[in-house]
Every structure is written in structure tokens, then in C-alpha cells.
Length: 492
Image 1 (cartoon, one colour):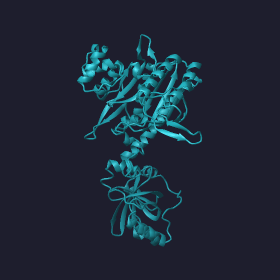
Image 2: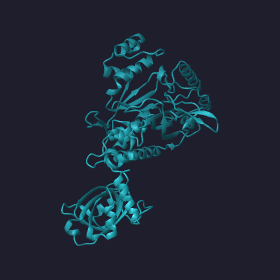
Image 3: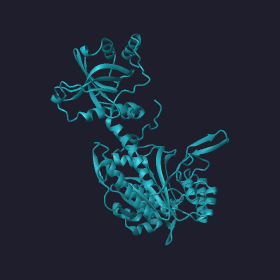
Image 4: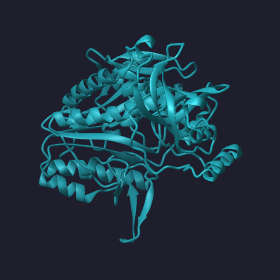
């Protein structure tokens, strides 16, 4: 706490003034007041009495002898306050002199325009609502230190309008997603956040302990297996927006705690889901940005490049994408030896147990993914890297799966769901073997889920999308921490 603010706080108390008022309900929204007089000229306002009461945080102050100008803002907007010593009571003026930038105040007064034509409130009453005990960052430079912005998000929101705008947009994006799925006849649910078995994705889980049951649980890495149980139970269109937890690395695209949308739809396939992704991306982008565009932020300059979302999005297999973006002959991707040679050529370490499918995927991730700037679906993934996806009838080593990329990052993963309990059990068993071989991210055996499939699941397709990355694309943010209100940080 700053000493000069503490001294003013103590002076307020000495003058029988509250420094932290419990409530104040007489104010009007600032934007409502500003809008009401937006078309009024200085002459039209002169000599009239338009009395209003506004409240907000002081963001700036300029003093000229016996007069001062304050800028205050609330959740709706900002307005200028004009202070004159001879128009305030002696007690109110004393209160004003004990205020600082950052304090919350309430003023009543007449609306007028200054010589510079700025709409203002000429204060005739002045009340402090909350005394701020810490200095805000200097106005013209704001809070620029990225570490501080993420660690002290509340100050970031006070000082940086762009940060506040991003999180307001995020709230709208989630609202529009819910509206979209509700319109399509989906039911929103909440499934467990703690799982006895970590499943539904390939990831390393966080582990916690349930004291009442005296059992270790895993923070969920995905809600997939629970949502598909609901499809078995007859909720044939279901979605969930909630948190996932993956105990893995942190970078500009990854955060161990993140928000996920997952949805499952009976009687459709992965082509139908891709159509839905195109549809809601365009719809929500248009609502947020006024047109169907996403944005890519330049890592060096911070400049934004528009990405057009309109039109039909390209759909490529991994082999086609490697041919198009890396110049690799698709025929070379049909031989394990030739794929292994390509791994050597591009300095990709081949790990024990990798089959052709995993090697092709590693090539794709290293050589192609970052080049997928325009929205693109990569389809028909190897079975080896898709333990829950249904195989194609004409090629059992390939699954009916897609991932959607934009701005060089993956946003959506979806596939035709495996509803054959025999096949699912066999794949779980292979994953268990990989886990026993040292792969901490491999699936565990989920016998109850296999039992659910034995009751019968209709033909179903499902997909998941990272909400954080979706917001990044629509708001033009390169770093995932810019769209997470309180990202985890190393201790100071």
C-alpha cells in the first residue's frame, strides 16, 4: 500500500467519512447519460438544468487552481467530471481533495459541454465510495509488462481497454455457441470433473485424492466417454462446455487447464460435423467481428492479418497435405522404410513402437501444421493415433476422423465414434500395453465404457473444440494467456 494513500484514508476517517461504502444505488449508467445528450450542442445545454448522478472509478485528474477535471468510468463507459471549489459544499470539497486516481466516487451535477466540446458533469455533490490504496500504472503507458498483466489481471482490466474487450467478447462467444447448439436441438450437460479412469484423450492427467472414498482420482482430460454414455442412454444430441486438465507443458498455445466444447450427435458422420464447424465459425465470427473473419497476430509486430472464413473450406488427407505443403511424394508415404528415411531427413527422432501411421503424423506436425493458415480440415487419420475413432470400411488402418486447423494451430478434433464394443475393447488393450511400455499418455482400460457400448450406441459422430483457441482466433491473440482470465503462474 502507498503511504500517501494511507494518509488520505486516515484523514477521511478523521472527518467521519466512510472510505469503503457498503452500497450506492442512485447512479445512472454513464453510457446512458452520454447517449442522451450526444446530439446536444453546448448552446442547447447552456442555461438548462439536466441533473444526473453518476458513479465510477477515477481514471485521470487535471487541476487548474480552483477547478479540476476528472475522468471516471463504469462498466458502460466514461465521462468527464468538472470540479469547482465554489460549487461544492465545504465537506464535499474536503472529500474531493482526499481522493486519488483509482478511487471510486459518485457525483451529482448538471450536464454541459466544455470549451473543447466535451460532455461533462458539473459536480454539485461529491461522495467517495471506495478508497484505492495502491497507485495505478501511469496512464499513458498503461500496464505493459506481460508477466504483470497476467499475474494481476484485475489491474490489466482497469488499464487496458483491449484486455477487457477480449474477455467481454469471450463471454459473447460462449453465449453464441450455446445458442447455436440449442437451436440444433442439443442438450447441455455437466459430467464429472474427477475420473476414476483417465480417458477420452491422449494426455498425462493430474492426480488428486478423494478423502471420503480413500481413492485416487484423475482430473479429467476429456469428457468424451461420459458424453457417449449419455448417447447410449438416449440423449442423442448432447454437448458440454467445461474445463479439462492436462498435466503437460505450457506455451503460447497450451495451458494445462483449459475450456473445452465437446458435442456428440447420433445419426450423422464426420462430414456432417465438419459442415457444422464451418457453419458456427462463420456465424459467430460475423457476430463478433461484423464479418466472417478470424485474425492472426504477428509475433514480432503485433499486427493483425485477416483470415477469411467464407466459402467452402479445404479438406485434405495427411498425405495430400504433406504433398501440397512439404513437397513429399505421396507414394513415399506408403512404405515404412521410406517414411523412416523422411524422419531422418527432417531430424525427427523415431521412437520405439512407432508404426507408419504415427510416423506420418509426426511428419505432418513438423512440416505442415504451421502452414495451415486458412481454415483447413485434415481428414482420415491413422488408426494408430486414433484409439476411439471408427475405421473406414475400405481401409481398417485409417479412421473417419478430422482435425480443423486455422492460423497454424489445431482447433477442432472430431470423428465417427467407435460403437463396436469388441473393437473398442481390443483398442483399449493395445493402449494398456503401450502404457505398460512407458507411455504415460496412453489410455487406460475403461471396462464400464465397454459395457455401455454392449448395450448399444447408435451411429454417432462427435467433436471437441478448445474454447480458448477459438477466442484467440476471433480476437487476434497469439498467446493463449491473453484469453484466460487468471492463467497459472510460477510463484513470485
